[in-house]
Length: 245
Image 1 (cartoon, helix red, strand yellow):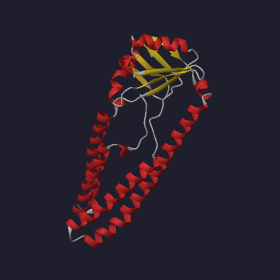
Image 2 (tube, helix red, strand yellow; image 1 turned 90 degrees about the vertical axis):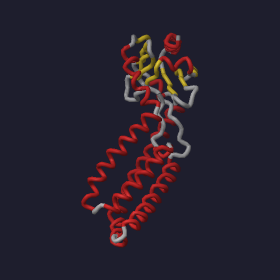
Image 3 (cartoon, helix red, strand yellow; image 1 turned 120 degrees about the horizontal axis):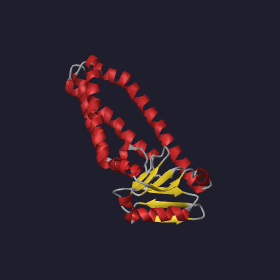
Image 4 (cartoon, one colour; image 1 turned 30 degrees about the horizontal axis):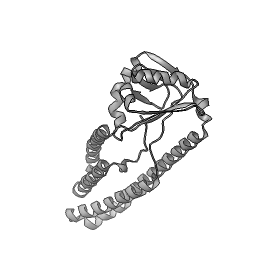
């Protein structure tokens, strides 16, 4: 499977979840005294994390496919590449794209840290001011909390999309991998795997100059782009064809 970029606001379900979160937090801040806020927030985190996991499982094909990993691992190995790092590093185009993806993800993480710091400042100072101004009216307090938090979230959605603009799914290239009778699985930290049932509907191309075989998905429902660098393209292609049959 190929791994995309981690911008949660590219999924409309997460946007709806963020709006629900704002409604809940605004109600919590406006109704309960500050000393009880932490208990409600813990309950809120448990609920939201459960919903987020459910959404991720339903929308992320990588999570759905995890159940097939054991089947691939236990099957008989018909081809193994123990170290393709040197071959991969000679592909300057791929290394350049890989470094760009790392840089982009690094920018997003930095932006996220700054965003959290701003939220902490707002919670400590701005929300305290709101409490003093509207403490006598819970509805007004709720509305002002909601408008403020929603504005921050909408700005976050806009900025995060700007940061991740142009990002596409990353081609995954394991340095160590096996082709078994039931699929392909990496032996390194990339976590790449592909079950045999997907190979007949995949686009398989080879590049003998750069010494790799690339397997791409033909459907948007299950996106993957796996590049297998190898010292022996012919043996790798033969193994993939055997698995496809």
